[in-house]
Length: 145
Image (cartoon, rainbow, N blue to C red; front, side, top):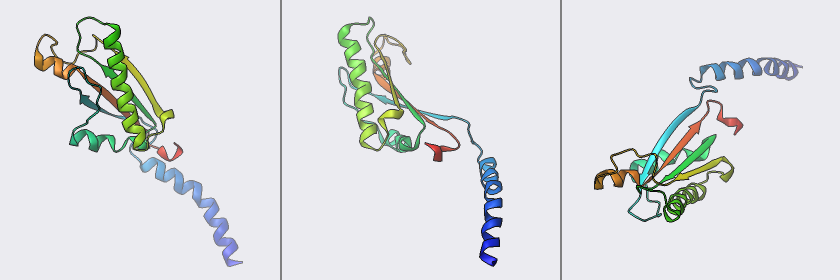
């Protein structure tokens, strides 16, 4: 009889406890995004994040959504550079899938000769523009994903 009462009380209090937990989560249901920039050598599609990038990408398997944008530093879009931007995005995607990110959570975008983050008329600027940007989006209640 005593265990039946405990079970009944537990079942009544469970939704209250879960609601309190959800309210205590600062980001409950609110998207939290982290963007990781990974540069590429000129003409390369080899994905090699630095130590900081590796650390940030480690949270990607638990993300609700991951968006990858491949970019080049060319002044005019060409078929070759579009293919390179796509290859960079695919290379980043493969890296993430190998580390446990569901391919169903990943979206790709790629474009050449656009979305520059630095002055493309300088060597240093072009090096920064040859990149992928990876947005890792978490939601407060990620147990559902």
